[in-house]
Structure formats: structure tokens, C-alpha cells
Picture 1: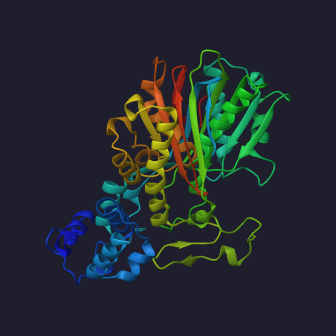
Picture 2: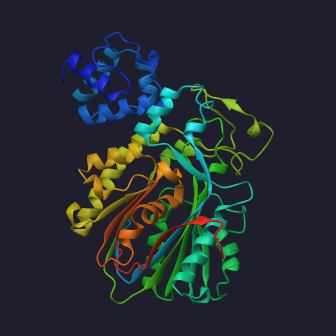
Length: 79
Length: 360
């Protein structure tokens, strides 16, 4: 499992119109100006491609922060 | 497991007919609350741009009828020489009788022929090809006319951003004919009914009949507006489903046919949107030049007509009359249903996209 830092980089890379280095562990991604249905798809795709983890839109909605998302992905990868 | 090899028929011609009314996402700034940046992202990443839609008087049957008449005329095939008519559609003229029966009359087929509808969407064209090939292989059908078309633009709510800018209309006609020099075609078909609610028109059937309540507009958490009689799509679930099942379906079919991706000239997927197709192609490590994915941005997602539209619109010139073109077709979506086929197009004499209405 990669570090939280790298995870955030992957996230920034995945979502359109997000500049690298602008997000942090406690970023509430649902509140990002660019967070829309397309952002949901690109994050789902990234988690699948980079971490082999599947996630639903409703799971994304309940996790809310990048650190929570990172923990979810780490746990899924471990299982 | 419905995998099979069929080798008694060839595809002689495919015609897709699209309406001429064109809509463009750039003109729908109001629908997106003035968010031009979002529109730019959707254009760039999902691949939304233009789509062709029918007017209130035109149906999928009309588009299929026009495609079929053009096809039969160009191939110099009499309608009375057709032994079976299959119409794949989820937007028929009537709850009953089926489109195939109505079109049987409009096209002037012989009474000594079979006609039936197949109620599938995105996977429908491949299912239809499978059925047509089986009809020939079973005996008794020398020629099968496969029609596939939908007018999804007529069942989406104009204020539903999840679907309104995405779906277009189209109708197609494909002629499948017995041949003793045909090569093998491989098919595999799958279903997952557990996902039936992810792409659905919830009311207007018999589970929840039409009523004043089902016609009430409701706005969901994402701010999209629709009634229960409009198409409802859970984009994220459909995306998850597609990237999970499609690469697997394609790989398994190639294994079954004992061929590698290098032996396939083109991979023609149901044109859901460019983002999904790009993702699937990347997972399968396919050469992007072999994967047409420009149909949604010109015509929209046309449900059962999307695969024929991609074939006619993007590959028409190269497929027509070329000696060996092995094409893998794969449709996935509503049902949930998916199917893949590896077919030989070497007998294809006609592969054309036409506008509706057509000049006689």
C-alpha cells in the first residue's frame, strides 16, 4: 500500500481541473468545486486501476475526507 | 454457459439511419447552471458533444424501416426473400403488437416468415446477431433481417443532466445470409439481473402502472429532475459494472476462439461514452486505433443502434468490400446484460450511415 502522500497525488491526478499539491489529508472532497458525477467516475477508475479496489458512489459519499478514503482503500487492499 | 461457435451465415450488409435534428451540449449551458467549466470537462473526458434526436412524430421503427429499405434496395434483395425478421428495441411503437410484426407489414415481407422483437438495449445488437445466426444454422432460414433501434431521447427528462445530454437516436438494419464459404463466428452472452435497477424506466409498465404520481417531477440529491416514467441511470454503478465485466468478457471470448487480440482488426464496443471505452481499452491493452470511440460525441449513446452506428459511421469505408476483417463486437448495459461476438466481415458489401428522412 502506498503512502497517504502518494495516494493524495493519485487523487489529484485523477480528478479533472485539480492542481497538484492543492489537496491534503483532511480535504473534504465532496465540497470541492469540481466535485461532480465525472469526478466520481474518475476516482472510481483510479482506485480500481492503481489499487485494485472497487468502490461505489454511496461509499464515496460517506467517507468524505481523503484520509478516510485512504483508510478504506488500505483496508480493502489488505482483505 | 451460452458460448457457441456458428459458421453457417455471413453478414452481407449493415445500414444505420440517424435523424437529422442535432443537439449540442454547448447550447445547454442553462441545464448545467451556467457551469461552462463543467461542460468543458464533460466534453473533454466523457466525450459529450453532439447528438441526433428524432422529432415527436418519429419512432425507432421509422428509423429501422428506412435503414431496411435502403439496405434491401442496395443489396438487390427482395423483402419476400427474407425468412425471419428480428427487431431489437426497448422503444417500440406499441406495447403490443411487437415492432417486428408492424415492420413486417411496412417492409412487405412474406407471410411465410417469422418476426419477433428482442427487448434488450446496449447488448441487444450482439444478442440479435446470435439469434439470427442460430436461425440460419438451425435450418429453414436462408436470410434473416436484423433490425436494431431506439429513441432513448424520448424517454429521458430534459432536466436530468445524468442522461439528457448523453442519449441519441438511431435505427439499423443488418442482413444475415446462409453461406457455405463463411468462417466461424464466436459468441458469448451474460446477464446479471441483480443490477436491474441501475438502468431502468421504473413506471409505465405493469409493476408500477402509469398514474398522476408516476408523472410527478422529482429532483434527486444531485439536482437532477425526472419522473418515474423517465429513464433512470446510476452512472457510477453502470461504470463499475462495465469496467468489471467487459474486459473479462472480451478476454474469455478470445480464449474461447483461441485467438489473441492481434488477430482482431477492430474492437467495436457499445458506444456508452468515450471515457468508459477508453478505460476498457486500456485494461485490455488494446491499440486505440483498433477501437472506434467517436460515435457518442457525434450521435449520442443510441442504445441498441450504437454498435451498428459505430460500424457504419467510423468503419464503413474500411469494412465495405475488404477481404478479411475480423471484428469483435461487445455490448453491455441495461438488464444488466452483456454479450460479445467475434465475427468475420469479409462478406460485407454494404456498411453505410444514412440520414432520416431519406430521399426515395
